[in-house]
Each structure stands twice: as C-alpha cells, then as structure tokens.
Length: 378
Ligand code: NAD
Image 1: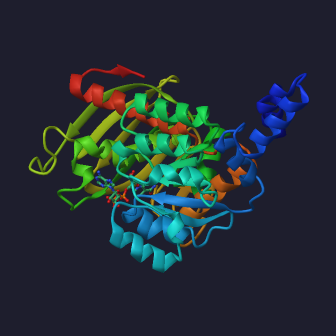
Image 2: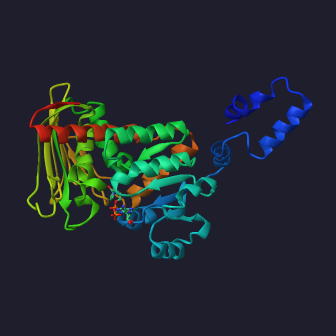
Image 3: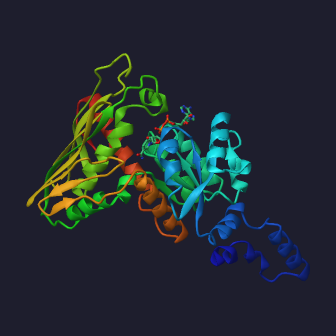
C-alpha cells in the first residue's frame, strides 16, 4: 500500500514550492489525491473479518450462503442488494443488517462509499453476472461470483479485466474446489498415485420441476449446460488434471419441448478430448438425477458418488475410501472463509475468474459442436 501511495500522488511533491506542498497535502487529506478505492483498500487491510454483501436474495443466498455466513470466521454478512422491499425487511430483521447496508439495484453503485462492505457476492441469474461484477469492481469491492461465471467468453473476459483494472480480487463460487474429498481425489490424479488417467465420465443433473424459471429462459442464462453442465465440465477437468483440446459427439435434447423451448437444452451430452488421447464423456440434465465422476486410472478406478452434493462428496478408490464428513452449509462457509482469507493475506484466489472462463470456453465449444454436428477444437 505504501508503494501505491508514494508512486502515485506523492510524485507531484518533487521540487515543490512551500505553497504547492501545503496545497498538495490539503488535497491529500481531503482524499482528493487518491482514488476512493485506494483509501478504502488502505482501511480494509486492517480488518480481521471482511464484510460481504449478497446481491440477489433467491434460493442459493437464502438457503445456503446466508446461513453459511453465520458460521464463517473470516467474513460475515454485512449487507444485501435486493429489488424486493419485503425481502429487505425480512433479512434486516433476521440478520440484524443496518439500513445503511441495504441496497436495491438502482442504489447499488453507492456501495462504493460503504466501508462495511469489502466483498460483493453476485448470486443472480447468469446473464446478470457480468453487469454486477463490473459494477462491484468499479465500486472498489472485491467480487465473488456464482457459477456459471457468465454466458459468454467475451463476458468473462470483461469481468476479469474490470477486476484487474480496479485491482480487486475475483473468485468464482465453485464450492467443490474448496471441499476436502474433491481436493483428495484431485491430488491423487495430479500426483499419478494410481498411474495415468485412461478414461473418465461425469454426470451432473437433477429433476427440475419449475417450468418458468430463469433456467428455462435462454436470455437469462438458462439451459442445463450453463447451470449443471459446468459441474460435469469441472469433473472432466479435475478428474484428468488436464484441459480438453476438443469436443465431439455433442448433443442437446429435451423431452419437454413445451418447457425447454426453441432448442434450449434440458439434457446435453458430449465427449471431451484431451491431448494425451484420452476422452471424457459428460452428461448433464434437468430431467434426471445423476451425480457421478468415474476416473479410470492405470492402477484402478476412482468412483466419486455423490460427486457434487452439498451434504458431502464421497469417493472409493483402490487407495481406500475418501469421505470427510460435514454438515450443510459447511462447503459454502469453507469456500467463503478460504476466499476471504486469500483477500486479507493478499494471495491469489483458489478459483479465480480465469477458472470460470475456462469452463465457459468449453460450454461454447459444446453448443457449437451440437449445433453443427461436427467436432470443435478448443
Ligand atoms: P434464484 O432464481 O432462486 O434467485 C435469483 C435471484 O435473482 C432472485 O432473488 C431474483 O429476484 C433475482 N433477480 C434479479 N433480477 C432478476 C431477473 N431479471 N430475473 C430473474 N431473477 C432476478 O436462483 P438461485 O438458484 O439462487 O441461483 C442464483 C445463482 O447462484 C446462479 O448463478 C446459480 O447457478 C447459482 N447457484 C449456485 C449453486 C452452487 O452450489 N454453487 C447452487 C445454486 C445456485
């Protein structure tokens, strides 16, 4: 921080007249020399817990993130952003949130002037992620953003750029990457404890009974590949420890065309190809409960099931069972504590924006392959 101050505004103090010095110091003390972001950042460094504002008080914020923020040690629920006044009232009472930390989508940018809020957590439908991540970063806040990061690679890049420009951290809410069972099988793969990976398959899906939600609305980021498909893509990447170089055999379908209209995918399957020649079959669906990752290695198979449940991930392998136990919403608390700690320690985020972008690149390739019926290089 010292460096930022001395290499920034103070350079104007080179060989000054006495009057210039007095003028410059007066401007500095009025906060005119340094951006509000720099000054807020200076205050933030001293905190031992970060204040988090949740943007969008739907299912995930209500049922998982707010309860998790009652358990976290490195951060706490400091504010909310909602378009529904009755929700603001309910949350204010339930979580003791002061009026000055409650925003709606029109007043949101004023969050820049609120030192209680260090992190803005965007928990909106995917098509709104880009706008709110960029507004939060421009307001000088660190940003956490739910998966899928956005609905295009171009949007992901704009979000990463905005956070970089404002020197703010950006993390994507992939809770599993903070989860100990996931970390354990990932480590087995990365260190080749069971030899090379020969093949894998991953499925992520559930029966979605809502018929008129953003998940069925393309403009808002609907379609199963964005919502659940990114879990299957993460499984393919974590389960091989590699990045896919191509997509084949991609197919989108629906058995409920009255709900999944105009080609919107209720189910998507694809084969991801990797440089070593191995392939991973993925399946994602809003019409079927599927939750597995199978990793065939030279010395045996790792079977992860459930692969992505809130209550726990469990795996069997020739090296024994992987099954660290915990209660809901521990995963979300762990994720937010990890991310808050990284911000306070000025470390890189475990799951940065670039990680969300990698998945959206693959999503785009799968949709392109499904539309053209041809393999697509990534
Ligand atoms: P939800 O529909 O329950 O909530 C979305 C919220 O956004 C609502 O409060 C809604 O009022 C608000 N909103 C603001 N503008 C809106 C608009 N124009 N249209 C629709 N809603 C609008 O959704 P959710 O299940 O809470 O999902 C939110 C985000 O969280 C998504 O990105 C989703 O993928 C993600 N999510 C992640 C996990 C996880 O395990 N990491 C789990 C569930 C959801």
